[in-house]
Length: 277
Length: 277
Image (cartoon, rainbow over all chains, first blue to last red):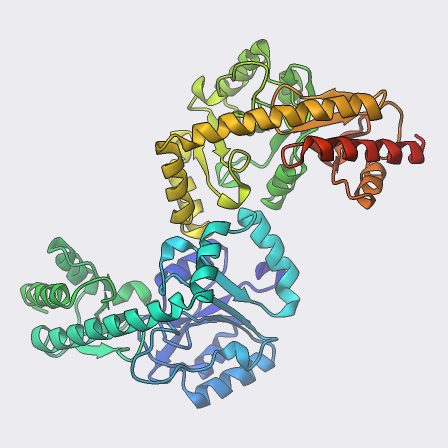
């Protein structure tokens, strides 16, 4: 659909989701990398790529966890108003612990932002329920693309979701998992301090994962492999980077108890010492 | 996926499903038409197209309702063994009234047949549950294509289906709807005799629809439009034909009571007389 609109390059955050990048490339699109700093995506670097579109995770950047800053948002809006298309993945916007949620970019510039969200992180990826708010110009092409992809989503999960929303159960569920996630996040931060001295944890304010980076210069994929051999599943940060960067790991905490988290981080610490970077 | 395998043309039955043809074309594939007679697809004509693949509905050809005959099956197997790929849409195979089911082509030649089925007609299209048995050579590409399409199906409808199968409810449901469909089919045949003199009904032995053809030379799309204006939804046969043919209508009976069916056919008869073909 983007290619039919003359768009052959979609800039992506770097680091940024490997899965999203693979998806864009599968669709025949180039994915020039744009660096991310503590305020989010670098709009000057986005401009420098010359790409007509960008895929962003402004609410909780994956994998660094930073939130797109106010001045950066305004700069991005200027870029979009001049003709750029923003694809806003509002991923993890509802999992927020220490500060109020930020508004979606979509609310500021609906004509230039294609907004996408899902209940994958809130309820279950297996529901396969998400939504997209697209600029009006893309509506017909999107409806046709959806038809040719799958003739529409299964009705049953949507009915279940509607029931959970109408009954207030979804709000109750979110409050409950937010408390649980915060405990698990705190356990992970404590374990990182105890077992991974020198590691820096990023993105603790929201989301369901932390990213840790390490000093030194070693292959984080080797560390992830060693941890997996001990039964601890992580993702090497390098998977999500197109340009060279610090070694690191992406560590999910949503699905493990505080005890398991502490044990897992301790095992990563042992693997790290054995690797001796 | 087919194009990656050097397949750019998929022959289709003519008449044959408009939706399936649109889908293939959306994927950039040509769809040379192959005539269908009372024994099903004409394999000599398939050979003449030179297409390396064919999409078939052997159990209950859409929309004519014929079943692929024994000699025709053997001829088709020879074509496939010489390198042809058969995509078998086992559509409506379970809705069978007056004779035993026929075996799937897949059972005869698994290396050359890509078999597809779903519960759309048996339970509900809104479940979006189907299956495919592909030749081993296509397995990895199919898994990747599925991943890049939707990351996998919703789990909830699959769990519901598994429960219905394990508990025997699915079998009971099929027996129940088979009796109901047969009554509705019989009501439709009676109404066609009464209200559409001269029309020929095809495909009564199985499925959830009849196709009627008319003598004369008129635009069946106009008849379908006139019927729709009276609240009777049908599909003109010409939608499903690439080559010129007799005018006709595709008439579904699964979702209407015998009374509604009789009234609907009567309204079509009036529309036909007003058109005066």
